[in-house]
Length: 296
Image (cartoon, rainbow, N blue to C red; front, side, top):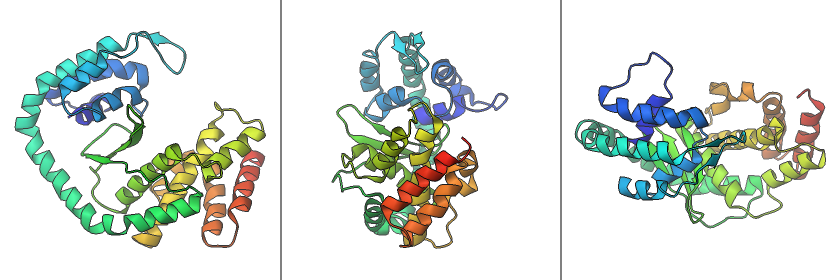
């Protein structure tokens, strides 16, 4: 219900909103003024993911820091609009459960059944391959993946809840296919990155190499270099364990194009590494050298 409201709130102007969702969508759009439509709602999202009932969300929302400092340094009153969103969802819940939930629950159950048959049998081998490829020691934890029918862009998210437990949210509105498999593995890679304290991991090494060349946290390359490699690794993992004809999410969307020149550099070098033609350390050094030599 929460992510359906988020999905509708992020819709372009002119898209019709179901009348029963109108009040909640309006409340979500007030918060959207602070965080935007694309991700960025981590604090609010975790209130919902970490709760079993809306009453629990309301109790947690009452503790939200006010004023809240946004990434751009602005101080905003966040607690009041979050509590208002919870109140609208409490009013929406009976209608949602009666009218919308039965069909949506059936779709989620069907998706879960397909994942159990087509994805889960090989997922531990796929994870082992990713751990080995990325130089990450097994953190020996389980991260739940919550399926939702729709969600605001980008449609998949990874969070750390109160107490440090990881959790992922993934939308299924485009069906159960290898793109969904890659998305789940990509979000898992975020969990592995955040959970790992291994200084030799690929992502730690890349960030340290960039920092040693004076690249600062606000430089887009500090985000793009490790993040794009997560997509490259997940895409290749799907080809090896699920479908050799799989096409990377980054290629079927604008992600790789938006990440250039990083994407082309990493696709070439990391595939050489995964094919056994190039050692990991040499591959990482080449990636950083070529990214830095390219025009930002």
